[in-house]
Each structure stands twice: as C-alpha cells, then as structure tokens.
Amino acid sequence: MKRRRPSSASLLAVACLGIGLLSPTWAEREPTADASGGAAEALPRPALNHLYVVLDAETFAALRDSPWVERALARPDAGLPHFQQPTDDSDRLFLRGRNTYLEFFAPGNRFGEPVGKAGIAMGLDAAADLEALEQAWRAAYGADVRHSEVKFGRTDPLVPWYDAIQVDATSDNPRLVLWAMTGRNSCPGCREMPGQSPAPAEPTHWPCDGRMAGISRTSWG
Image 1 (cartoon, rainbow, N blue to C red):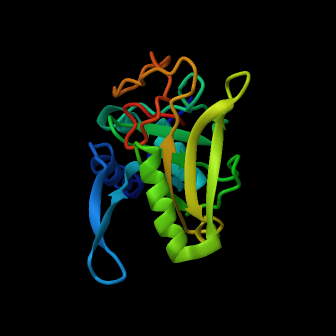
Image 2: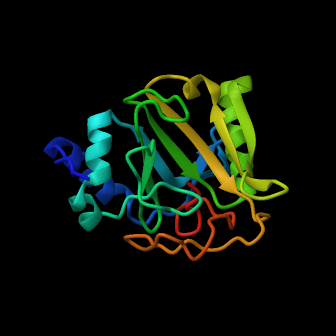
C-alpha cells in the first residue's frame, strides 16, 4: 500500500493535540457560590476524557498512514474489539495516551458527523460527581439536559457501561458538542488497558472499571 505524505499543517495540528492531550489530567473540585453570595458545596471539576474531530478524507488518510505519527505519538488503532491497525475501509481511528485519547473520524462515518465537527468528552470518576454536575446543568439549562445510560454491547446479556449527560442544544450543531460521563463497575471481566505507546494489537485488559477521568482505565473506544 502506498503511503500518502501528510501535509505539514495536519501533522502540526496532530502534534499540538498530542502534546496537550496525551498527558496526565486529574479531576478536581472547584468552589461555587450560592444565591446569597456565600460559599456553597463545591462542584466537581471534570477531567478531559477524550476529544474527537471529523477530518476531511485526505487528512484522515494522511494521519492513518503516517509513520511519523506512529513514531512521535502513538500507533493508530481502530478501536474495539481488538484495537487493530486501521485499514482503508476504517471510518475512525484512535491515538491513545496514558490518561487521554484522540479519536478521528473520516467523512461518511458511522455516526453521520460532518467534516469539521469536534467533540469534547469530560470524565468523572464518581457517580455522585456526575449527579452534582447534572443538577447544576439542569439549574442552568432546564429540560434541555439529557441523561443517558449506555450499555456495553459486547456482552450477553448487555450490562451497564457508563452514564453520560449533555445539553441537547449543543449535540446536533455542526461545530462542537460537549458532554460528561462516568463509568460503571458492573461490566463483567473488566480489565485495565495498559497505557502504552504504541498500544498492543490485543490489549491485556478491557476498559470498563468505572473510572472516566482518563484512559489508563477507560479506553473504551
């Protein structure tokens, strides 16, 4: 297979993302003020879980086939179930770090996301933190906030995988979507995904132990 030479602009963008996002992140709590101006219970501060971008066909192919990206950042993979190397037919690929990961989509992807759209997923380790954030969002945005319970589709029967909240007004726009999530501990046989670069073709562990603040234990793509 002939490798395409990636453009300098696309590789510079990937490098900047890699430096910024394939590095450790931690969830914290930040103080808030109640209606009277006094101190209120601190809201959780989510950590970055992952970011996705929908690329044009040329940039996606250049990223997929670039030996430089594999050497400098990570070996691209096509996600679950085996984290295999992306092929010409792949509509998405992942670059994984120790605490976060990047997901890139091709045009005509399985989710119908348009070229140029980006998404930011925030992670929280505790269900109580997600609930607190959901309450704050509902106070600000009302009924436009949606809570989703996602099940792991590779088990029989299906089991709860993670919970997510989002503001629906942002989910369908063509530019940016933002959501927050926390994982469940009920996925049978949950195993830790090692934070290696490049990642092994067959990860030693499955990514579902409930921790969503980084991909050391949440590489669920």
